[in-house]
Image 1 (cartoon, rainbow, N blue to C red):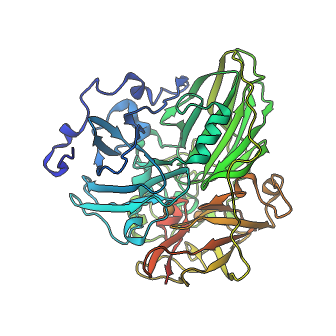
Image 2 (cartoon, protein in one colour):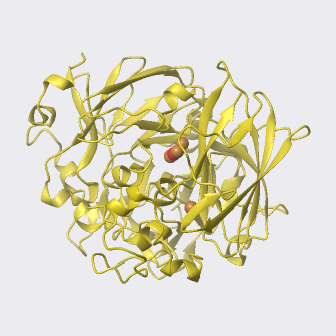
Length: 533
Ligand code: C2O
Ligand code: CU
Ligand code: CU
């Protein structure tokens, strides 16, 4: 039954003490203390909610500050459904399902929710052209047209996307299909036990998003590695194969993921999926760069790990390639940024008295420990094929160059910054385009994301050595490039060609966003409207 949220006070929206299971309360350990990984269940934080056509009210709320929950920030999406309460629910959907969600804005500022990766029309895309004012609602009604994959949702009010997301507003969307069911059967995977969905984040200590001017240029780096809201997380495992479905929900941070033994030896893994679902075939890997908003689906084989061993998921050290010239830039930021940053004029990175960077980008960090506790028999083999993949036909494609760079204090696409209502990219419906994303040498990495359509990565050229070393084919593509994607990291000096089929099942025109998913870059204007007509 639906509640009229407008008539309820915040107090009545929150679960009574004790209504949340004890595990939900261990989301943030004091520094240095290992904490059991929080695994979402059928309610509560990140709890799995399968609406199956039922209408939901998703309330964006500011919750009372609870000292130990700082990592989750003060904002949350709250849902009450079928007698259960959820914070930032994981929406469990299936292809073809009708989704009816009403966003109820209980904040004191405008917001809107965007379904990252879902193919929807402009009205349902929540890209920021229409906002829900405080105490107002916005009703979404769409059909799931995507294949099985891990998608997510987060706010998209231009200029406040970064802050609202960092302060806790985001959730997962798990679209399930037959390919995923087949993989689970083949590998004997049980969601929540041997198949774990892991949200990686780097929340600021104290939960407060207060970027310096330099942070707005580079992207905001939080302080602590959190997995599903758990700092210093560990999980007990058995000597078998695990499936890990990862989302990088950091505002701006790229990770260089690898598994190692406690002694530091690499443990290889298998990449089976990405933003767009399962790859055609599994790909063996030793490490993977993982940018903000990307998803990665991997298999970790612990068959040979002795009981007592600890395997660690970590981010290895890497050169984040932020051009030196940028460190003193940033005095020419848009007004809505100047308001959130403190201190005037280009404070060099790391010298902002308000916020010392405790985890600079590229610095190594442990993310999650797998503690092998039990020896079990396990003899399943990874299937040789995972899903059908028909590459996008680029024969009649028009090529469109898009340059990524920095000029006059702003990150830009083709030297333009975002202007509401303008659509510098005009595409003819039902055509295919090849976009050539070229990043300047003097730039920094940009995680480029397109709303509404998934794409094929065709080729990477002149990649930095650390990236090229991981290439899987003669096109310079990485393991995670080998399926459909919605977000692609483009390194300084690199050119990435992507193919997009602009098939439109709705009346034209429809408008979408193309932007950098480093949320400070996005809010700063590194975004262009795309009109498909
Ligand atoms: Cu997560 Cu405009 O996107
Ligand atoms: Cu999106
Ligand atoms: Cu960027």
